Amino acid sequence: MSSFVIEGGHKLHGEITPQGAKNEVLQILCATLLTSEEVTVHNIPNILDVNNLIQLISDMGVKVSKLSADTYSFKADNVNLSYLESEEFLQRCSKLRGSVMLVGPLLSRFGKAMISKPGGDKIGRRRLDTHFIGVQKLGASFDYDADRGVYTLSAEKLKGTYMLLDEASVTGTANIVMAAVLAEGVTTIYNAACEPYLQQLCKMLNRMGAKISGIASNLLTIEGVRELKGCTHTVLPDMIEVGSFIAMAAMTRSEITIKNVSYENLGIIPDSFRRLGIKVEQRGDDIYVPQQEHYEIESFIDGSIMTIADAPWPGLTPDLLSVMLVVATQAKGSVLIHQKMFESRLFFVDKLIDMGAQIILCDPHRAVVIGHDHNFSLRGGNMTSPDIRAGIALLIAAMGAEGTSRIHNIEQIDRGYQNIEQRLTALGARITRI
Image (cartoon, rainbow, N blue to C red; front, side):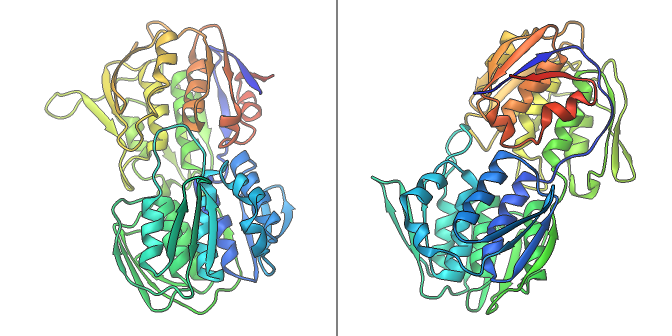
């Protein structure tokens, strides 16, 4: 198991370019199973979750060719359906959260899918009801073997229908959309997720010959087609990395430029950091974060304490709340961080408290942060990363702390961030992998 050793207190300077969006590319890779023709995808990040999914679909029989450092082609013209019932396939699915999005394409094109209960982050319960209820409404039969932890779905032919999702699940919506594009008739999905990741998936499917309307809204209409063809797709920059880099600049009182961020797809993220008092300037399609010795948290108009909470798009993504919580520890003022979607994502704050942060964990969903205003720094600490986003948040805290920190279980960080220590060292950080 690898660890990071971080020497805190070093300023950053220069330019950094975000990687391709992890949450988007996991959907896109699964969508390549919907056609027998070649699909080429650009801007694929070299991270564990993505590499594991590429290897998994390759072992399923998809022809995978690496064309350059971040470009791959996929051709699913000879998928090995018997492998999908093997213990090896099911065991590998259980270790990869994104594997659940194989269900929609497999059902849609081949009429059956088996998948084990997927793993991933330890951030609390992440139910799959939306996925399975959605495809059942399209006509799939569903069975769960509790002893093996295996879901089995089948359908002679999926048929379009109307559905109102009980939650605006991004991966659930993606799965249902991929199942519906080849279904008979029209499918209407209300309360659909509309994150840029999902918009990108729908745009790619339309280029492949699908007929999806309502993209970027929470009401999607999908007119089923007989087959899809190949296409070329470019993955958006990762908005979570963009937010992480803004936070790093603030915590280390540094000046950096984040290049090619696809600003129009960042939504409320820049303004959410501005509410913490951080200056974020748009320069074309770049973000410039100037050096700030102090940043002050805004209050609401009536003077009450600022609350920053996650919400379905176009609200604030839950993936950045851990990062914003860390930034708030060195702001002037107080803020309530309200993590609504996952009940275990704030449990890493005990590590920040050990570093000297003033945080009151009210319950599994809410934490009050009383900022230090950089009057004194966090102390270096010895920590373990529980999930991807907490891992990067702890890394940011360590970069702004006095002294040396160690972060263990950094495989969690590697799942979502490409060569992160090398890229940050190029900006002036002191991070060593051991």
